[in-house]
Length: 277
Image: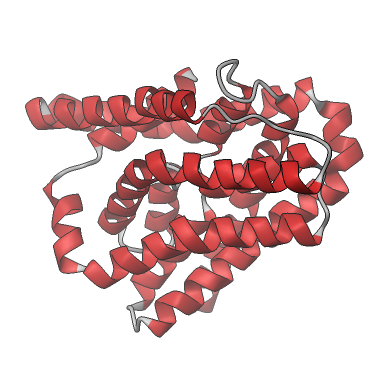
C-alpha cells in the first residue's frame, strides 16, 4: 500500500496546467482513451476469463486488474514511444478518478456472475472498497497536485526522484508476491499467463483500432495504446490482499502476472515502433 500511495502522489505532482488544457485541446482523444480504459478493457477481461473458464479467484483477479486505472509508468513509456506525455498524464489522472466509482460497480457485477455460475461466493464490500480507493488513490493524488500547485520547484524535483524508483518499486512488489505464491503461480501460469497476455494484446489492438477510427495522430494513438495496456497493478494487488476487501492472495495473482507481462509486451511495442522509423 505505501507503494500505491507514493505512485498516486507522484501522479499528482505531474498534474500541471498542460494536463488540464489537454482535455480541451484533445476532447476526442480523452473520450476515446477513457472508452478503451473504462469499457473495452474490463469487457475484454470478462470475456477472456469466461472463455478460458478461469477459476473464480482468477476470474475476479483478471477483471480487477482491468478495472484499475492506467499505471503511472505509462507516462514514461509514452515518452519513450514519442507519444503525447501530457495527454498520458491527463488520461491516467482522469481514469484514476473515474475508476473510484466504476471499479466497485463492475466488480460487484462480476462477483454476482461468479456466484451465479459457480458454487463459490466471493463477497465484495462495496462501501469499504470505495472508501479504500478514496484513501489510497484520490487523497494522495490531491496531495500531490496541491504540493505541485504550492511548491512547483520542489514538486518537480520530488517527481523526478519518484519517477526513478516507481518502476523498480512496482517490480519489487510483484516479485515479493511472486515469491510468496511461487508454487501456485507456476502451477497456474499456463492459464493466468495466457489470459493476461491475451488481455494485454487485445486491449492494445482494440484501443489502436478505436484511435484509428477517431482519426487521431500517430503520437496520440501510441499514447492511448500504452495507456490502456498499462494498468495500475499496485492498486489491484492492494485491493485483492486488503483485509478489508478480498483478503486473497489468489485474486492478486493475475495482477502480479499482468504487471510482469505488460512491461515486456509494451517494451516490445516501443522497440517495434523505433525500428520501423
